[in-house]
Length: 221
Image (cartoon, rainbow, N blue to C red; front, top):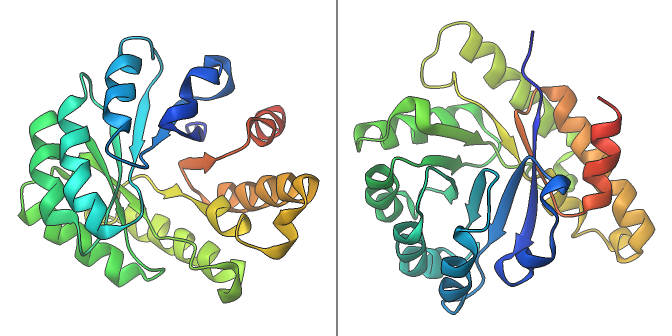
């Protein structure tokens, strides 16, 4: 029987204390600035559920800050994410701490495989890699991102060890950028629908930003 999707609730580090543990499977703490280190130190002993540390999204800042944040962690966590510009900087801390690493590439199966090979060559265990194919922006057409997830799943099950990893999706990042998402109710519907789409495609982890969306998706299981 297929394992259930794990839902990750993404919140800024500064807001984590307001979140109930019943609202998520994994807590995703979004790093915004260096000052978040002191808050993270304080939170770690209180967070009982699995944890994911989410980078700022700025490659320059991530290369500077993320290794420092990773060093603070007192358990195995998911680190999200490394890309072609940051992986060499992040890998030493990730490997040392025994963490899992999300590797993000544009929506292309060959690029995903190439990055997994490069990280493996640097010492990253394949069973600690999580694939993020990105969703490429809704302008590409959601079905394109959907099909890439499907292709990776098929190749992995067919025996390609460099693609036989769990897949994570940050699909709701893109729905939040649409002009329709300025309306709070529509933004919630968009988050639920995009998450449901990547779940159907085969994503193993789905990152959400709204507890209401997480609740709705869990009720559909």
